[in-house]
Structure formats: C-alpha cells, structure tokens
Length: 342
Image 1 (spheres, rainbow, N blue to C red):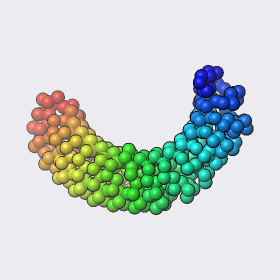
Image 2 (tube, rainbow, N blue to C red):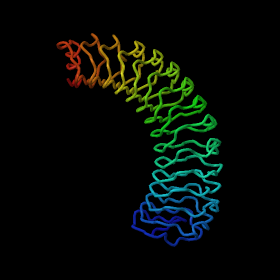
Image 3 (tube, rainbow, N blue to C red):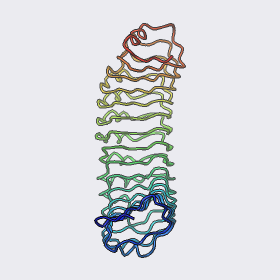
Image 4 (cartoon, rainbow, N blue to C red):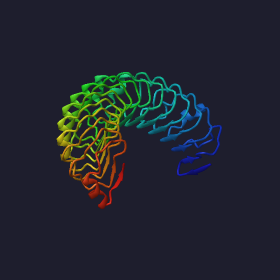
C-alpha cells in the first residue's frame, strides 16, 4: 500500500478486501482489484474527496451520503444493480458497465459529469433533467425508449451520449442545448431528427449512424461548427442542398445508405478531407468535389464514369464499380501519387 499526502493508492494488486486507511484520507484508488464489498466504516471518511473503485466485484454500496467532501466517485466495471443517494458535493459519478436498473432520485446539486452507460436503465429520474450544472452525460448502451422535452433544461451540457438505446424519436428541445463537443445518437430506431438540431451551431461532432433515417432536415446546414458528421447505415436517398453550408466539416461518413446522387453544393465544403460513400446507389458524381478532399471511398456503388476533374486525392477506392475503360482523370491522379484501388 502506498500512502502520500492523504492518498492511498493500491490499484491492480489482487486485493479481495477493503484495506485499513487513515480516517483523514482524501484520495483512495483501489481500481482493478477483487473487492466484493465495502465496509460500513467507509461512510465515516468525512475528508475523502475521491474514491476510485473501477473494475472490482461490487454488487452493492453502503449509504455514502455522509461523505460530505466527496467530489469524484468511480465505479465503472463492477456488478452493481442499484445505487444509493449520492453525496451532496459530488461532481463526478462514473458507473459505466454495471447492472444498474434505476438511478437514485438525488444525484447531488453539484454534479457535472455523469457516466451511466452500459447498464440496464429503461428510464431515468425526472430530477436528472434539472441538473443544470451537468457538462457531460453518458446514457449509452441502456434500454431507453424516450427522452423527455425536459432535456432542453440541461443548459450547461457540452457532451451528450444517447447511443445504443431504443429511441424512436428525440424531442425538438434537443436544439435548446449548448453542446460543443459531441452528440451521439447512434444505434437507435430514429427515422428522422428535428429541424431544431440546426440550432446546435457550436457542436463539433454528430453521430447518427445505425438508425432508420430516410431524410435529414434542411436546418442541418446551419450547424456551422461541425467538424465530423457520421451518418452511415441509414436509409438516406438524398442529402439536402444545405449540407454545403457546413464550412468547417472535415469528415463526412455516408456509407451504407441508399444515395442515388449528391447535391452540387457539396463542392463548397472547403475543409472536407474524408468522404466515405461506400455501399450506396450512386451512378454519377457531381462535376465538382471539395478541393481539399484527400480520401474518397466509392466502393460498391453503380459508377460507370467519373468527372473530368477530381481533387488531388491521396487515396481513391473504386472497388466493386464497373467503370467504362480507364478514365484519364485516374492517370493524372496516379501521377500525383494517389493510391487507387480498383
């Protein structure tokens, strides 16, 4: 056991029981051990600020609400089925990969980061949507079927992960958020997203993969902050012309849809470097593609011809198309060092 300046650190040491610790300990790191139970005396560690129990064998916790100094509680990768009310000053709660079916009604007014993905949640307490101090929220890999309009009240949220659930829709109030980092809605049952998503004009990363989307709202083009957009494995047949307004976009992933054409406005994506169009129904490309494009994946489409000009690509994948002959544009790309797969 290593103690220094109020910290006890014994990670990955094969411990099967919670060790003796000083009453004034401030940090305990017992991650990746074999501990199956916390003794009641843990609730008396009133100076404890951080407790890391990731990767143990815990199935239950004692009442920890008396830990008035606790700021961070790490419980990822245990076997918890429930959670007691949280300490009042808690700011970070990580419990990814447990078996929790219900979150406590009281999560603490100071909570800033909550990771509850990979559990057995079918809903969450109404109080969660009043946590205005939340900055990141991960509810992925659960069994959620709806998100209430109250989600719009999480005005401090920068990151939201609702992927791998059973959502059939998301409310228009999603557009009231101030997300900046990412929004994951992948692997749900969505057939559309609301126009209000266009108000997320500071969002950098949007993932809508593995849904049932048949259309995208025109307001998508107002998401001026987007750097990466992932839409693969949906049912899209076309993209709105407004997509050309995504002036900062660097990666656009569209594989596994039903696209028959691309809008001419796509040429205006001046920052685009990666365009993945694999497994669509494209029979032609626009006359002009983004000038900064470096990687273009066109595998398994229906292309017979290519535009006379293509940007100075570094990689072009044309496998499982049936081009007529050897277009001159490919010769020029090869001379420029482009890797071409056919």
